[in-house]
Length: 427
Image 1 (cartoon, rainbow, N blue to C red):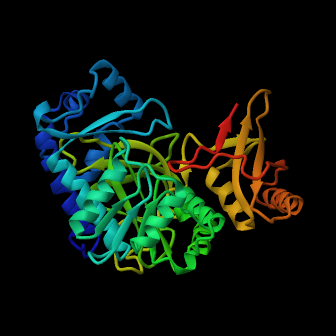
Image 2 (tube, rainbow, N blue to C red; image 1 turned 90 degrees about the vertical axis):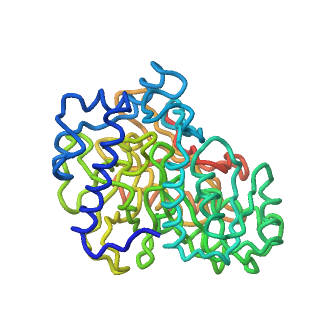
């Protein structure tokens, strides 16, 4: 378990020590990082976090992709010889070409320790039985979540390669108390339970830990999941393959994520200017991985939009940075329709708040000089489709002062997702 910091000064002092240790390891050995820092004057004796943020340029995904293309198959962001690396994973590729990522056993343990913070905040203990409702592919999050739970002493139950109905039966039969999946898939499992006449009111699941999409911190989405899983509470967190598990949900405030600050130096900047944002504004999350020495990232532009919370210390007692509403969306996901900025998370909040929507798909068309946006919804069984359509169009009009057309899709026609949902279609 990470040290409990007594104030912000203690957090920043710890981060500076970790940063100096990281720089001492990578500067003489990591060609990608040493090349980037060559003209900055940065050394392992750096005086402060502020100096680091002022001197070190952002790292972008495009740089990493280009480096891997130039130095296949893993790129040059490696601090040690190849035989030190024991893990290979890759990004999902939802934002472009997948990136392969290597880790040493030490860097891997660093990520497992961060996952332990997610479990600690969710009140998961060694007496829990944790069900992992996804196929174990090349993405990092599944494996770190599983192995960290095993280290904690939990009974870990993999659910790869099974139908949703089979997974539900495994959850019930094994008396699983914790479910790990995406928000979308938690909803899908709830729907399948109804179809299969499986009563989740008798489910032993008490905690559903979600990630992979913003939905876990969207109030209406959380309420939808919890209504389908009576007795269970949703706990959000987020991470990325290239940085690891980054946040945990505040134990005292649903929908607020704390940064695991013994592991990360986090900044929030204006996406357009790169300058730090003012209090209460929304900006892009920038991360430096303080303990992933084998394949580190310095001031990485995550593309995630967050809104820093102002309360310090938090009601939960933590002095770690907190983000209201979790991950609000992606910088490249926001779109502009007739001069109005629209984030996907805002659309999802309205859809789930209205209820009776089994699935949806959003379509953005740029065939003319003015972007057009429409929403395709699949009503839940038994719902009044025309009333649902009317209510949604009115709610969208009130929220955005735009007429957003809503169309009805036949029941069962829209795709269901186990992994990250791909509901946003751009023509």
